[in-house]
Amino acid sequence: MSAWELVVIIAGMVAITLITRGFFFLPRAQLPMPAWLTEGLRYAPLAAMVAVVAPEIVMTQGHLIATWKDARLYGAAVATGWYFWRRDMFGTIVAGTAAMLSLRLTLGW
Amino acid sequence: MSESAAAAPALWRHPEFRRGAREMAGVALGISAWGVVAGVAMANSSLGTAWAIVMSLVVFSGTGQIASLPLLGTGAPLWVVWATVLCVNLRFVIFSLQWRPYWVHLPLRWRLTVAYFSADLNYFTFVRRFPRAEPAPEQWPYFWGGMVVNWGSWQLSSLIGIALARQLPMHWGLSFAGTTALLALTYTMVSDRNTWLAAAVAACAAVAAFAMPLRLNILVAIAAAVAVGVVLDHTMPKSTRKAVKGTA
Image 1 (spheres, one colour):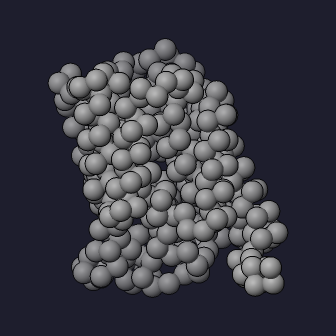
Image 2 (cartoon, each protein chain N blue to C red):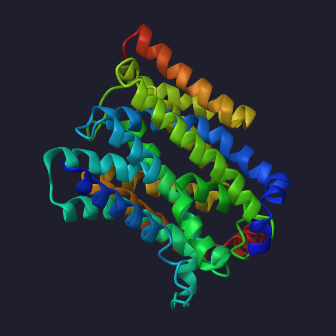
């Protein structure tokens, strides 16, 4: 692929990212939007996060895992326990990742 | 608003700038594990190291970068690459609707700045900090604080991934740190029964629709959770729930 092609592709990617991220606030004009929808959108960030997290924990290669011997399940459980015990982001990341790693490196789960 | 932005030192010193940076730092640490993974993927693609660095620095969109890599390798037509990036970015269109009341009064150049830098984490932390959809003077420094930390840690981690692609033990699954970070951030957002139910619906929808191409399962999950949330808010709003309990 030539340098110019890559420049065009990357510039297009930047433009697409800008337009999608600013789709509803780059134009000043008010778009007619039902009130129930704007209220319901308070669930959108939560849903987007869960939609990324859940498959990362319970799926492998696009399939639901069929075993309990998966280090990620225990990593997620430890992270959950730590979060509700200490309410601390940093500790949750370290505890969850450490639990996952120790099972994976010792038992090969 | 533009005056405060012009006086950049004041922005740096604003307590909300530090708060935005601090609240982003915890979760950005975990997400930098995904930045490393993205960097490794870019270094191992047909792009070559130099272009991988350019793309990482210019296109501030991890999912867009990762989705476009295999296509660039096979020499897919330009429009296919762009359509793919568009699809994986569609969730941002939904987010932008919620961003609107906070930013629509800003001049165009600042709206473009916000659009360029408002990745998922900026959105998640910002709407958690400012749940009321109305402009406030603390929002601008808070956004900048989070943005500087998120942009910096993402770029640093993906550059580390590009540089150390061959040395890192990727089979350990260290990207799990990113999963735990988002898990913790999720827990900060579930507060009552309706949010728990909406989250459960989103999780099931995302897993069930996982086979959809281009991460469109995320859109399905958002649509399902918003629909369930709207129905719950209207049938069982907080105020009447207490009243129901009282009469029962």
